[in-house]
Image (cartoon, rainbow over all chains, first blue to last red):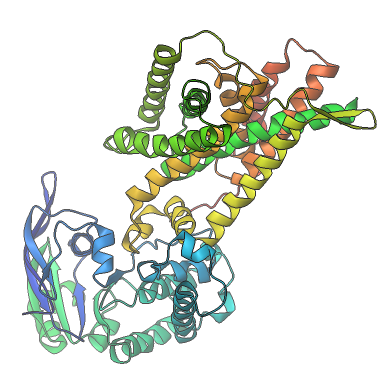
Length: 257
Length: 290
């Protein structure tokens, strides 16, 4: 059984076939990147996986469970978190609150248990403490101390991206989908993120699927790469093989290469 | 005289504030200007009336029953009507809530008749407290007190509970709420329930100073709407302040300028706000960067 697999996925928008009979598998613990030109259907694949779109055909299996047909909140509960290309934050909430919302699926106590929480021995209190501790660790990891109480919507772009990543990590996912994590970041931020993603993969034991245009980051980080164009697979292989593929060379180095 | 006007203004203003709050809560989450808000409150008030007079329940039970009814009514309306609409425009939503308004009015008229009834659920309007030359009725005190307590509870609910936080999250970004495991549909239904509850409280306090009939809440609805616009439609604190302000302004206008045109003050305020500060007096607006 594969850790995560997509089989024969097809998604149409009217006459446009955004994803065309696409299949790939991701092994547990790897960083798997999806690259391809703009409009190739990369984000559509993510939206199908996380339940925002309903594909016409295909299968998405995660740890042996079929994901297609599930609602986004059910997919989150299976341990799949994601970030977005255009940042989907809660702009009028603090960094801390944004990350806490990532813990939503881990909060079980209802209104009454929460209201009658006298002292730390109560279950609701223990849950709250555990959630806060998890969030603090993530804030430390991504160096967000300085902005923890500021509204997320007013942070600099690079920080906003980190808050979104932090929120995704707060879900303690088994699988993390990152949509262009490096886009719009400056050189220093990219450098930091590069190492953090390695830490996230290695130390937090999270499998990552990443859409990214920056080929340097992609080849440096990825265990394997999937190249798609017009929603179809060009190649799925290790970075050395992928960068040597003629169509990839053509797309990234220009016609003459 | 002036202090007296301010105090009765605050009393009626707290009902406008509750109506404005109810409408803003729904508008923030469902982006629906809910014109059925008044009728939802009206029929809940009728339920209290029926429980007390027809079924002879004690007052406390009747009030609790009506509030429970209002909560369920809100959830049912969201579930049966709003949720069924596929990608509705704002006009579709307005037409839909006006439809719901007419349906509820029809049901209330058919069940209880259109003639005006007294519902002095507490005979408090005639019991007065004197502070120097200022006179306050027990009903005024209870109205102001209850609405303040309710607002405080709502604030705590939105800021400090899991469900309240999930509601704010849904208001700010539905997609993000979904992928973080929040059941957005359910949150919306609960939002309608809570909003309906808040409106029903306003209805219960408005009935004793008015007369109970299917058009009970028409005026408070329009006033509440004006107060919500004044507050910016998306700011709950703004809606509350807008309600109090409108109550006071209206009262002062009625006393010093013209009693005949007292009720039109609300419309003048809507127009003025839309001219000079269309985002409302108190709205915080976040412009999404592209």
